[in-house]
Image (cartoon, rainbow, N blue to C red; front, side, top):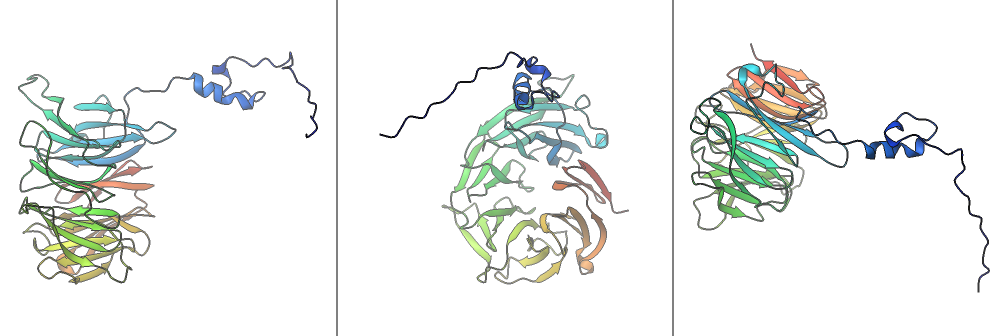
Length: 367
């Protein structure tokens, strides 16, 4: 047997008398007990605009929906708010037309029909909220009512888009490749089309057209873009582009309307190298045009507005707006817009609003 080693037991000295837990925060005599102060303080759960502004949406009545999240500590949660577009520079908790605190982060907001707001939460749920009704409350028509809820994705939703041709239909996607097409015409959220393995690589982008509610496009990190048709009996897609050299990595997509840019047959794909590719769906597997928008940073979002294509980038956070018909000539540039740029919307023909972390909101005017 191994010999037993003797030990001594030390008692807590009489001089060790720390103050109450709530007074330990700045006490240098007992730094190892500071965690007791943190544990003794109740978490501030009061409604507020958190530091991380993650998503913004606008409807045809110029009403904004904004999602802000608390992304620090072990418990992340968020809130979403509704404002008139005229309040964009004066948004506060008290001035909101509606607001709701969620138990999880609010990742994406998108307006479906004019009074229905789709909310993608961090726990994989998708919710549909009615935001305006004179029937429920004639005096205060802006009020929230849960229309439907579903957890049809195995991981949090990373892409959410509403069909402009039919605003009662939307499509959602998660990074694992799961797709769901939602029908909002009934009394609940109904997934009418589903694919559990749309891409072999991480799904990074999605776009819906303005002319039809039956097709949409997805792209992935491996350089693959696919065209989907929800009228098919079973989930199926057409390959629009597949990078066999594995040198491309798509990050986002945008689909022009018939009167925008070069027509509704053209798709625009952004990648990690700061390039924008034009792809004609009538001539798949080859790019019609390629332009470099950013020398540093990857393209995080593309937004089309009439003749203009807005490209947002991160690392560093930048914004560039180009006139596509003039050979992608840049008509607006702005660098270091945010610490991290998360979302953007066009509020009118010449005004782009971006949100993010750090500088929370910035208005870009082309005039």
